[in-house]
Length: 516
Image (tube, helix red, strand yellow):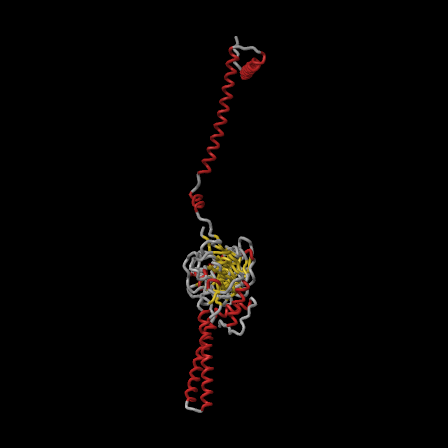
């Protein structure tokens, strides 16, 4: 009996059969849900498949998370060399500026206020009551605030007496009476003549008969009677005239007695001659007293009734009392003369500004610009204080210049500066604050200028600038140029190349190396 050993082919056939059976089972498992058949074995296989799918999703998510964590960790890890490179400062930058050719000017900039050349506070005193003994009272307001004033016009009436203005720069400080002399008398005469009232043959500065006639004519034209220089003048004048008439009669009597004595041919002739001499001397004295009385008598111009103003038309800025009210201090505020600009210089700028320097005037509010000239700079500082009214007629507010012409605003202190416009200012600038740029120095013609920080002085005393090449960072292309420095202003300095160096408009010079 023969025994057969399994061959390799037979094993292969058995393996193939087993695979076929497995495939068939898998197919049956997949078809089971579609045909609705359910067996206990098919249900277990479906749950296993779902579990395998969920596991696969978790595996994929975990892989993504691990990948991101790896990337982040790799980015945060740097080598020591990279750390040192990141901590190192950037290279220093080069600061430079261009060489320019232009007119270099040194300027002083301050604030100022446009105001009238003259601002006066007028306070008529008790004399305006015309000696009535009562307190002065306003009886008429002829010019309201804001009104223009012309020479010879009545401004206000106090206790029945006028207050009027004439042209003049000197303030009123005394009554102007017949027989008075001085510059203020000459100013009165000029004002009278400007209004058409002749002062006759009176010399300038002498209050004589012609001036008295002119004063009388002025008051008559205003509708008032002039006040006498002294209420007792009439009596004194009458007494002087009577004395002169009596002296004349004595002379006539002495002459008659002398003639009779001569006819008689007696010894009385010498005595009669002596009596005539005495009578003639008395007549001369009486005539002198009469002339003096006549010169002293006549109309005067009280200080309470006259205001001198620098120019016309002037303006009434304020009237501080109405009709029937007592006259207060500072009854009237007047402004006159061409507008000027007033300012104040701090102490460190006082020596930089001189009379005659040119000034640029700018109103930031309106955009209006003008040119002017420094008229005056005070020698001493004024304390910061608000202006106040004067105590007498025509008195100027404190803080003004020697002509009594302050700006009318609070005094900021410092050294008072007055600027005169080269041309008449626009009326819209009146009372406005403006910016003043005073040209304290100028090169006169275009010069080479560089920033002050570009110029350096070496130990050898030479002054140099460093000219940069096309690449500012290229130190090999730089060259040092010796220069002579001139005037400086606004952070710039005038330079001139010396020692054979070259420096031209448009070159760039080293200003500084900026640290990182």
